[in-house]
Length: 134
Image (cartoon, rainbow, N blue to C red; front, top):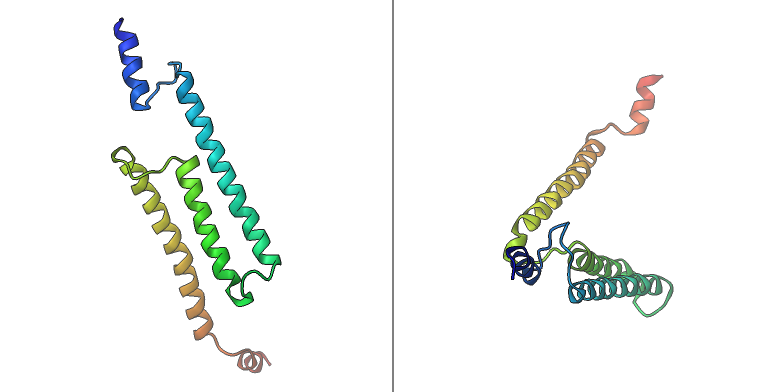
């Protein structure tokens, strides 16, 4: 066995294939099956959320909560099946980047809401502004 085929065999067993290497048929089928499962799950979650909004299956005031739960589940499906984010030791950097991105988004959203709430609280009522302009 040549050294190149040994490297390729080792790489394919670890799931790491270089761009120039040809993956074996079993790896391709596993990958296609994984994407198909993710597609079916994501489509089912989308269909269920559309169904819930138009049916009486869920108590009307709890529909936003049900949609939020389904949205979080769909984000999980996308992260695992399409972005390949897992808790394995080789994905620590991916998880840290994802956590940092979520932190930045949360800071932007909640910081903006906080600033707008304080601006609204500290603004003069409209009738006082109108009296000043007369």
